[in-house]
Amino acid sequence: MLAAIVAALCLHSCKPSFSFNGTAIDYNVYHTIAVSEFPIRAALVYPPLQQTFENELLDYISRNTRLSTVDSGSDLLLEGEITGYQLTPQAVGEDAYATKTRLTIQVKVKYTDFKSEGKDIEQTFSAYRDFDASQMLNDVQDQLCQEISKELVELIFNSYLGDW
Image 1 (tube, rainbow, N blue to C red):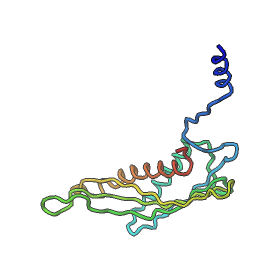
Image 2: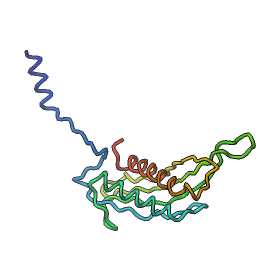
Image 3: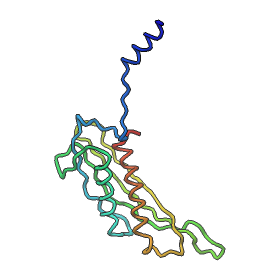
Image 4: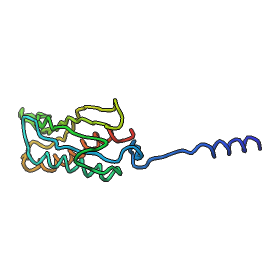
């Protein structure tokens, strides 16, 4: 009986806290975020990629946080550049020609926390998709860029704003 009372008191005094949005943001401290443009600084340039990536990043932050997006004077800042857009052969067939091609996109991101000193981070993220070499890049480029951008955004979000 005494053990049951002690257990009940312990459970009553311990209040577990769960966050189902997957963020580690203290909304009492952080209210705003600014996301700057991510210019393409790669040797190979696909102009629509910048807009695709930026839109995906802003949408993901909007869907997964309560932070307001502002242009300046923010609590947090995400800025960077697209530093890589590369095509590389991946598999070689019997005739010595590539049967698969890999599109890799690399993004360098700087995260600045204006509310807490020492939390600024600069990191490079990379993601890729393989496609059949018989396909023309022009035919699959938009879809691949969308898929890769989504993966990059998830990696960036989880590294800086997520609770992983």
